[in-house]
Image 1 (spheres, rainbow, N blue to C red):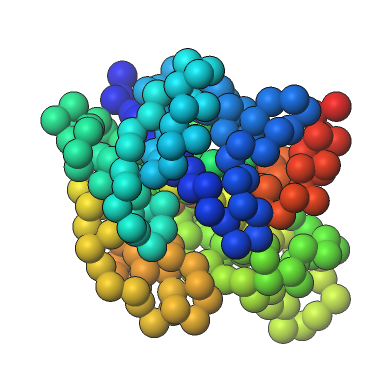
Image 2 (image 1 turned 180 degrees about the vertical axis):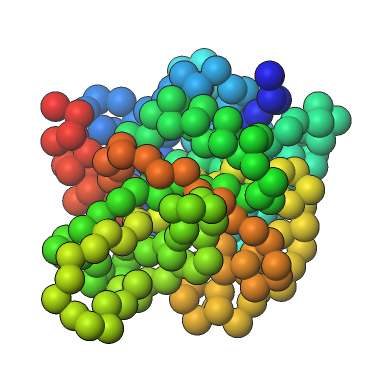
Amino acid sequence: MASVVILIPARFASSRFPGKPLALIAGKSMIQRVYENCFASGFETAVVTDHDGIEKHVKEFGGKVLRIDDDVPSGSERIALAYERYLKEKNPDLVINVQGDEPLLKGDVLKELAEFHMKSDYEITTLIRERSVKDEDFKNPNVVKAVWSSISNQCFYFSRQSLPYDRDGGREYPWYQHIGVYSYRPKALTSFVKLPMSRLEDLEKLEQLRGLENGMRIGAVLTTQKLIGVDVPEDVKKVEGVLS
């Protein structure tokens, strides 16, 4: 069986939602919900944080914490440091980065992602969900679209723009919403964070484009699970609605 570790980067400071990991969702903190769902996959799970309050809270509910206090630009760099300092000697096959604001993501989906990744030759794999062009989110720049092949399961591009474009117009066709969960082969993770910001990454503000521009291949698993990421306080009510 593959050796897989799930790392959940969690910062207290957030411009749109300060203290987000500790926000209560139906009586339980968001970070606890994310942790427990990840742990249910059966894989080793840890929260990676630089904050005393988050560390204390995670330990209180029995979770594992890897402390990284370095000032880093993103969660990817934070989990890469955690891998280098705490996990490299364990030689895991995969490192999965799960955002700390995905409280509905189930462990079964992460198992499916890991199984797909291990059978493939992709450096990185991620999750996508099929949507309809009738959905308002198709035109929402905050919802990222993946241009993906159902034949090869390979992602060719990610964009905030409405892609793919129907030149003839009027047709109903699926598009694929990108879900920001990444499974890395350790070598790919350490290589990725050493790369400078790429041109397309800077334009779209999507870090996965850095990997594509540098020749990394990204595969994707299609999931039917409806997820709601928590970006602003109003999103908490949406998640509670699903849970109820």
